[in-house]
Image (cartoon, rainbow, N blue to C red; front, side, top):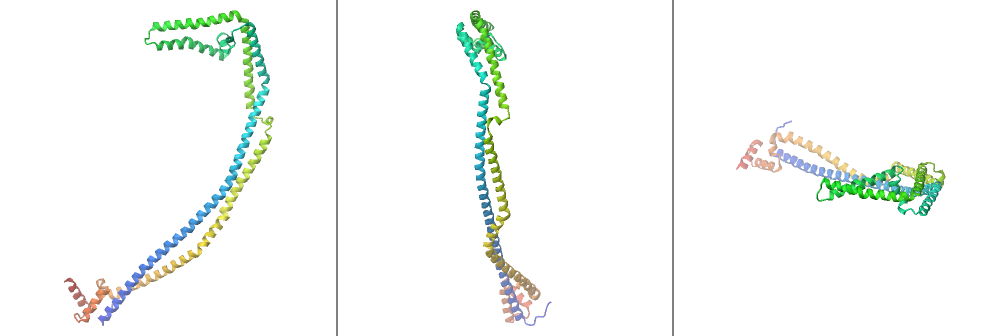
Length: 364
């Protein structure tokens, strides 16, 4: 509410005092706000440090527990791997022994057949090369393998070699190719016929008997392969005496399962119980410091709210009491002192004249 001014000097003194108090409260408000922000940052940093300490400690303890159990699990897994490896070696050795035992007669028969064939050829003075598989594949082929050997040999001698020689010539003519093939037929064919005639004419009976012996040996080898394959496919391991390994493996697997379960339980206990205890201990060690910071922050915050309230009331008071007469322009201590001096010098009879005189002086 606007009032009539009876004492201009007292009015200006009161205005100066109010403006000065407002400036002081504004400075106090800024200082309190900065202090509140500082304390808030300190409190948040302290809380973060406590939280980081909790997380780091919990993580470290959890990893230590897991590492201890993992070491034990790793040792058991290594022992289990070695035992399984020993079992596999024992099984493989058992399979080898079984194969050797069950094919012993066939191997012995083949050895007897070899001796018989060697004795036969020596008695009939058959050339040594006639006892080879290559000779029988060329002159007495029997079975897919020997027939393929014969075809491949003829292909190399009568096709590949002549064509290779022809391609190596600097000049290529059809006549050369015909001559080369003719020479190949003459040379290789002649050698083939000559060897065949010489050996067959002189040793036919021994060679035929040798053919029979080789066929028996091949039959025995097939039987050996069948027996070997059958033994390797057999899933019944009872005959290999692997019980002691199976017992060790079963015991280790049980121990491994128990340790794994204990690890799971230990980590569960840590998460549900130990973690809370660790957290309470660390937080408890910092509780007093946090409470002191929180209390200090709250006190500064309360003072700031009070100062803001007083500052707001003073602004409203100055606006209602002085600004309507002086305007914002003269609501400064130095300007109010100048207006008071003008009034004391009787140069003006009211505030409007004093303000006009001040303006005129400052325009010069």
